[in-house]
Length: 285
Image (cartoon, rainbow, N blue to C red; front, side, top):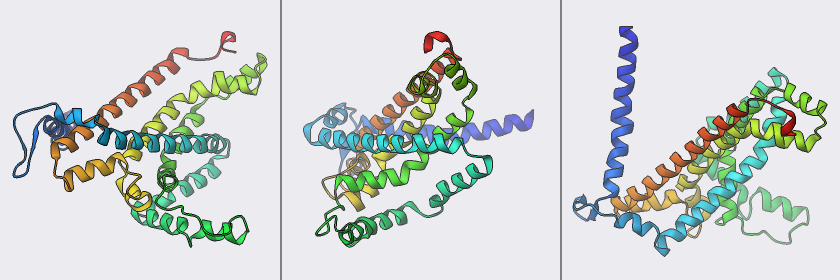
């Protein structure tokens, strides 16, 4: 019992010092005023949060949301059928495919981003293939576009969408599908009333894991997007390191934390909804 208390105490102390206190300092900084000499000074103010919704910052904020949302949607559309098919293979085949899925993580993401830059360049693999097949007369500009940013985000974050979806499919009771078929439900009805609700926690979890990191991966926008395709992470980085406006950068960070809290709440509600339904009945079909 003493050992258990020791482990819990050490864990709580670690979380307090390295998680709770830094977050509280960030929240406190977001309400202070910027200063060239001391970075932050009194008095407290709400002006930092008001600036987020000014046209200059809000345009970048909204554009970042759009890019992250599109990348999350593409990841979901690709990962959902892949995870569904993956759950249907034998255990040995699943293990091999999952290994291949996480294998790229053994390489630094920055190096993989440079590889994407080579692939999307005017003399890269995609342009060279399209020109050689006669689809294009000359290479097109793929780098430093929204497409390049979304492509990079999807490539780097797709496994984070696949894994929670695979977990949901793997835990799904297939007897419910057979029961639905016996009750006269067609394939679309079985998907809508059985598969989709049971995998909803995996969908929300995957979107949660992909969406917020997608907004913060500033090096993707730096290397692939150019100056016109910034993510929220670029804004935060520039505010802290270039403009040295720590309160404003902290305000953006707090907003991202609030978005994370909202998505976690949605995830918890989805889990409760699935647990409340509990199974299948005739009225669901």
